[in-house]
Length: 291
Image (cartoon, rainbow, N blue to C red; front, side, top):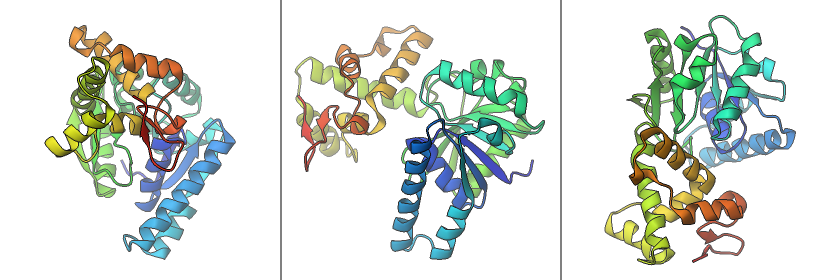
């Protein structure tokens, strides 16, 4: 299927990055959010990030201007339904994602492919709530989207080959690399990454090391670019907890039990960078560990 337009539902951290790379690759993008301020912030951020790419000579000024001209924003969900592929990039809560797809269904074109950027939730279960499970799949980008090379493509039990091939073609046009994952909790990347982060939180919880020593150990001892607690703050502790709960519930294995300290941070509203406090406090000039 020829793809000309992409709809993105959710103008947060992932949604604005997806809109950025899609517009830069030549797709017309309709970016949706229920919050008008979120849409304005998203467009400002995309503009700044494109300017940064121009200054680093990654793209030309003309390419930057053309990309910005391809993005339109709307609070009207039916407007998104007129695109060829829709990528849901809302918060990692299944009930919210289901409501979005329920609202889209009456307005969709027959050929429109539905996808979710979920990092852990069952694609088969999300697809079963729609009228087109064969045209539904997981389209999981990594954060930050303009920088990260990988995209996980996850087929539900009913996803047909044409849908998969169409999404694969989009990934290739973006200049990114696709990894095909089966529809099991957290797929590939987060099935491996989140238990590591959770174990780092347990290491902190049990007093084996403090925040600095844990992150420094993994950066210098395992050559990770970011420590696991720093990375958790970057991802969002609420997202980390949600994925661990999906793993624990879906696989029924105690090794995926979320650390109580992770739960406590989320209950406190200390979600990481987006709330200025998590395992680090970001309110000053330099981040300071909170434990």
